Image (cartoon, rainbow, N blue to C red; front, top):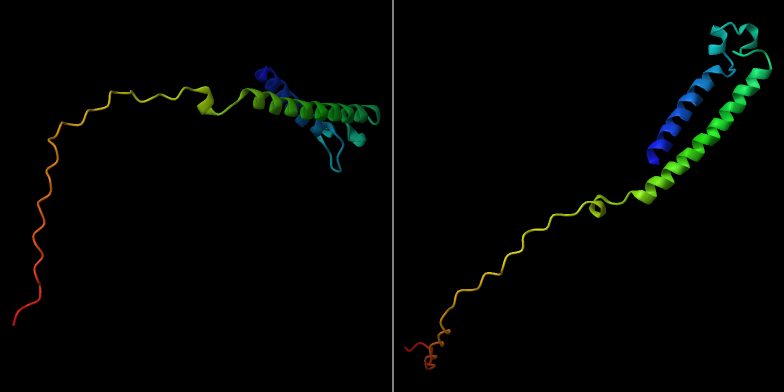
Length: 120
């Protein structure tokens, strides 16, 4: 679905680009190259200019609709890459048992307190 809308979107964009070349401008447009002469239009003096303008407006509307459609469809289907791909888990191994040790030795008894004043 998204591929179809993208192709339509690109085709509309290309046609809009081509149609803007055929529209009347202040200077001579592409229409003058094909013998438009004084009318500055490819298809004639009056009627076809409105046809090209109407086609441009309708295609611009189609371009806007396809842009909104692409944004809507892509936001519904795309998620974070972390959501779409499974993250490999590290292998779980059994915990290593601590080596058996002997009972802790009792601390040595404190020595009797002696007078620490120096004698003269």
